[in-house]
Length: 392
Ligand code: GLA
Image: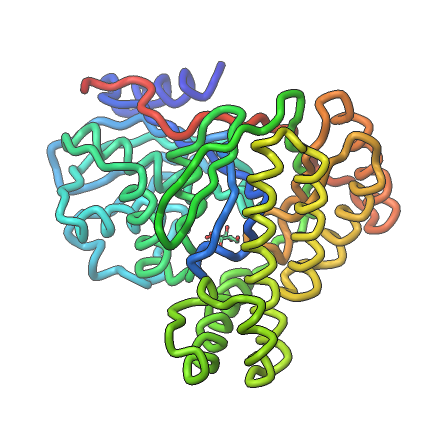
């Protein structure tokens, strides 16, 4: 049974009627543009063929009642209580994402309706492939259908970011949500997080993205993650007296770095170095892909991993090892960690013919070093979120 059938069948069983809408929103990989979105930089993510699914129907009340199939757990909240619960550690944890979206939708002046929902997902959780953005965007699409409004993809992503920043206290950018709604099969999404311009860049055929799980899930990952946007804001504040025109690290050039980085503590110099380098790598990477130069693109992915390790300091030994093993394999173009880092998956851009040998080599060396076999997934680059069945 596929996820559409499961989510629909469970809805009928549990709520005794058919859903009005079935919507799905995928997770994403981010091959270049690490920690760039919140600095108004450039990113190059893509939607994957794993998604969060919701089946929903209005229930003529103010209450959102969600059955999370994967946890066999129900969570409910009233739409008029979400504002008061902003920043509160509500249980079950997964319920905070739909609550955050309900809050953001209300803040945007739209009216989310009370609804009964079944939620399921095959996006791995806590692994750097944006399982949370997938849930947010799937709920948003369901509300749009049921309440009768339609938002542009950029607004959808901005609402998701608002939910994360202001409801869930995660200082993330908008890359994950935008990739989830605007992704296209076999394409990466080049997004300029300042101008909000975007372009689809084709990924060469006969490639796949292999995900290899470090198995590390840091408890304090949000604290670790949030420290990076904070450090970037601190660097901007320290540079502004010398560079009055800058708003974010997006505005800092290599020449500025040469002239003024001595005003920064060493740790902030490294963060700025990463931000400038990553912007260049995304531009060069998109150009390489437009010319079908996948090997050149792969080298940039590798350089991004090294900068993330050395300048941004968001890698860990498990990810360093996986990256190093991947780089030695024939048929591997490039490899870097996914999402915010500190654990989660290694993303490997591989030739389709090399998926199995690369996965085997990475698993074997990881097992020797860390004593456990990593999970591996192969994903295809897929279309973004959609309403799979609905009345409108
Ligand atoms: C997480 C965040 C994104 C982005 C990445 C790092 O996935 O949710 O907004 O900052 O980390 O590139």
